[in-house]
Length: 438
Image (tube, rainbow, N blue to C red):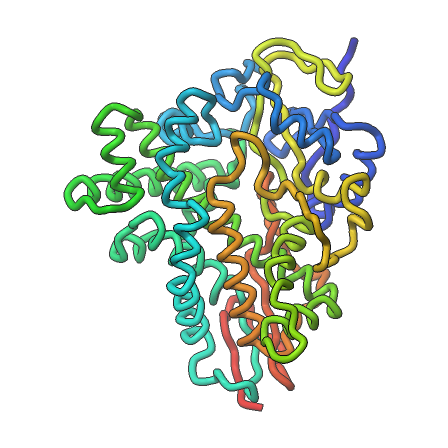
């Protein structure tokens, strides 16, 4: 039986607002043939029940060795030798080795551990905004700030250095451009040499980080990874891959989620006013609203839109669709989180929504180990921004927001926000902050 013609899962309209397409796909059924910019075809799972089941389906493996020749030929994956050396991380491992590697990182990201660090994270947020706002810190000031350049691009790395034990001298040399390796391009793309140069730069940096920990070990996650490698519990490729995952996956999704959360709030001014009032406290404030708001913002527009590849080892049935062995299966977390069969008024941003069993962090054995940290970062980041930027609003037209083209992720690389009683309009693209006193 011939396979259906794949539906393109890319383009400006799709990246700007994928939810109408997801709605149509959910109505058609749970499994759909799609194609990505690289030309690789995949099977996309939509709908909450189907997504939840697929994320817990032990027939599906994550190891790239399970991919068939058709997938491998066109998949926008890293070239060798980086693919073998940097892609052996948790997202691409199956038990039992996945279990060994996840245990190594679990302690550093345990909810109780990162909660104890909350005061330090709050200090970091304030330090960044102090620098961004300069002398214009009083509530009478007005101006424009690019939240990404001034805050969201830096806050996750600063937090991460504290959690994993990355020395400040090395953290200062991390090039955010390396994070774009999670936006891979196909082998024939003209930007492929730039992509490969980023990979080589990041790989060299990881080598410096691990060697630094061998020379000067500490009581931290990076040291535990190096020790586990030296003792033979994990390979050098697994060690480097986990460091790669920490440095990239530990930053970009939080940066992007800060932007999607702010955009959602700005599109729903009544909810923005409620949340801002709760953050300021005072009589009648709802102390539970900020935490609920983060969960709803994660559900409403998740920065991690799609999962990474999964594969059946042999031909298998998935909700009535025959999937060939080695074909890639992708779960749309964003489509699941807007499923009206699980969430009433699913397209509505409702900060009082409870319960809220969204899938923004996945589910099952590959549930994001950094979920607790990400939640704290979002709570702190939104509190700092919404309390320090009074009257916040978009400084450009909504339709002028430029959504990143990354296959798996949602967010914007620039988010100019006006604040204050008489905010200025932006006058120069790329200028992180402009101020004037009201």
